[in-house]
Image 1 (spheres, rainbow, N blue to C red):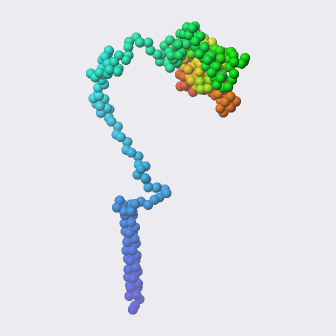
Image 2 (image 1 turned 90 degrees about the horizontal axis):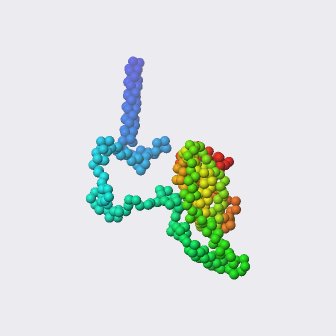
Length: 329
């Protein structure tokens, strides 16, 4: 075999090997592509888990937002609904009789004040017993006192005391009179306390009366709680006599109370009487019901607050009040 034939045969073998390599690589690419399409296709296997892109739980898919109705559809739906018309002076709505509503509201009937604190005649949270005590005659007052004395005598007997010994002979009467004094706020009238002491001065800056001593009776255990109250308000042109603020606090304190309600009642009363831009009341007191008994924590004190009007809306005004009374020290 000559050199030319050897060279041609080696070239042909190289071309065959190259062609075979191209076919194998083409088959590999086709197989790889088919595996991808099968892997990602809907008919293939599920997508494998991945830390970078985990499969979404179908329960996590947010619900589609409802389509907003156009203004035209809203207008048409609202116009289709016609409100029933109540005829003046009758208890019928749309031609149907409402027997319970008929005659429920009478023209000229004296109703309660919108405030939950002050009644239409100036009494604060009046009850049947309060009005009886206010309107009673001297004979009725003596009967009330005698009834209370008998009750105190019974209590002394139940605790194991000798009610006939010298030191306790007058105790029932003394205690009954003291209890009537400590609860005299029930029969006091807010309007009589203020007594028209409201003056138009065009003043609109903060007014504060602080460190008002307050003594009240815990309604849960009938033992005292004592402390100090700070009252501030921002007038709307009208101011109130400064002595009236401690008197209002005294009125609500001289009854069976809890501190939270006492603080709120004072604030609401001033808001209604004076109609200022805002009222703020803070009270700090010690409760003997948790000092002498119960948890017996002698150094514990309770702070409550009630802010209305601009004191509630504006943090800067509220913080100024707290700084001036020394709470933010």
